[in-house]
Length: 469
Picture 1 (cartoon, rainbow, N blue to C red):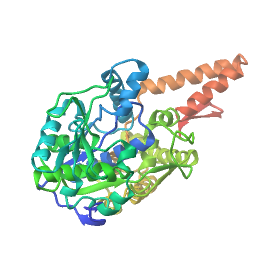
Picture 2 (cartoon, rainbow, N blue to C red):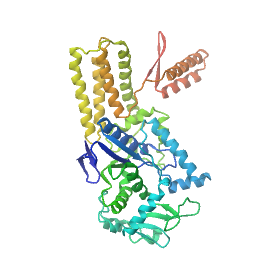
Picture 3 (tube, rainbow, N blue to C red):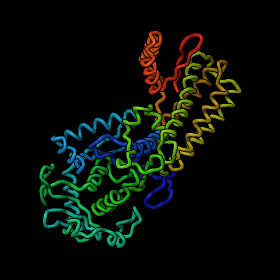
Picture 4 (tube, rainbow, N blue to C red):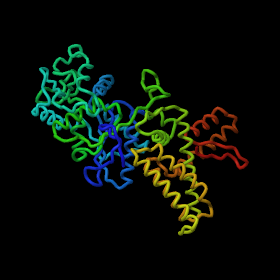
């Protein structure tokens, strides 16, 4: 496995700290609203990485936090006239629903920042004692970036350039800083904000301190991999490195992985442009697996352009795969024979070649875009080599191979439930009755509802037939 390491700007062979084990930490969301599709990309990408490494035999400790104390959370709570905990608990539930819909496996741990304050205070005191942090007159604690010679190594920024480019401290209200690049570790409380007691003042931690405590605690020490969106490289991850390495005297993580942004119709996603989409917005129109499949159709380090046309294309492509699976399952139930024929044994080599191609592409810095081409080749081979005269052994082998690789990508392949099939039949009957009563508006409404469920109707001599698309 080769991973592109943001720290070295090169692909490196992955070598775990402990053989056969991986400690991985992915920065999670700030829980004050529904997550948007930009939040979903790292969740999907690094969940797929985890799945692949487990498929390859690694035991993965995968930790992703919830930031549950933040200016945005406080603002939301004040707007609603409620407590911050009410806001965060509500949106943690919503995140969990979206993650479940997108088939993102629960992390080994989902620590919350507010439950780790004591550890953050301890870390900050260590940094002060070590000469890496200082307390301003108002009780604010700052990290002294000049005390860490490697500051800027992750983002490849020069500290002198950073200092000259930062805003004037007096104008920004940060007169207590010694240097413009110094950052907050602890901030004094303000009216109406949650706070905790500390040796310096009543207040709360800075955002950059959270993961320095939670990651090693829940992963079991320094990390093999720290991951997140590329917007976190600077200053968030840069500042994490500075704190952790000054406190512990060792590298925080051996590999840093970052996914690129999502654009909407070739424009940056933003609320001001009116092109801001939550996961819920998209999954109300498409099966969540279409969104996941679409996210994996590009390399994670490449910007991903999002549009309705591209989502429709992903929907069609995924439907082709699912149709092949349904056909294989139908044939598996009908076919007989526990031993493959000579021709099937020969064809098995073609399947094995595609599995190897899939593995090779995934080994190349999680190249899901190219790995997916192996899935389509397997579909093609299945369609031409598995028939009603095939052995059950061959049919099952091809089906199992496809299901396994799709599971690595996190694409659900379970058969639709009987209850759902019955719901579809009921809607079709209602539509037929509406047409008979010349209630065409209701009939069209039902057809549109079925289309949103991925169901297409076709009138035949035997009556109305339906199929998934």
